[in-house]
Length: 224
Image (cartoon, rainbow, N blue to C red; front, side, top):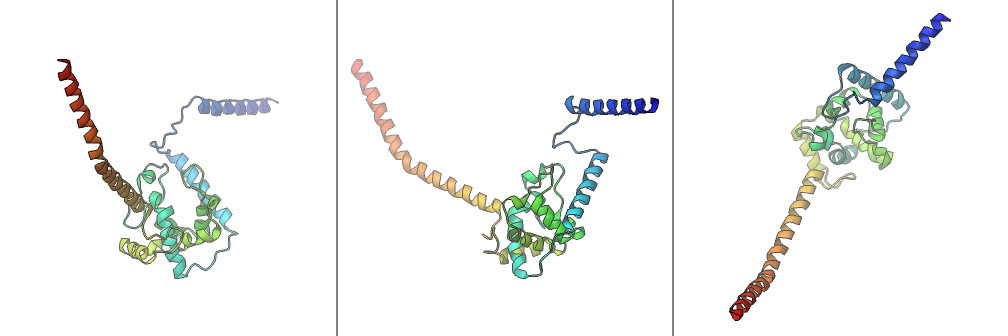
């Protein structure tokens, strides 16, 4: 009976400590503060084991088709490169601010199976910023990305740019331009258009202003 009382007391104090830790806000949840060594190890180990377990039953299609790779490189540029970077390209601002930092997918592809890459792409990873692309994309739309990622470990920056040039029109993001370039072009076009409209409207606004000033002076002189 005494032993059971001690065990109960330990469990009770442990639960009290957990709830106190949670409700008193001692843990820093900011993305600018990295996890400690033990927490990083625990989360990483849990994630890898979870992905490996769940990807074991996935049937992998033939990923050697060149058309599949060409579609995949465009989709990779539109869906992945912004956070993970690409050969010769750094991650964009959003990717640089995530914690944990998004991994280099060339490194991931070197030690993960295609089934594991597909599972992560489709289902995402909780509390990492990695979205579940399966919520908006069918499986057939995700396998091209996986096909391309399996070739990432052998690609340098020139090889990546060459693939992008050859892949225009392929895949769901097949414009031949990455999202950042497209957004910049749209912004510049809008700015030029707005400037042109402003220049066109200026003479019409200046004349009434001048007329108003003249009427004001005339009225002032008339009062004198």
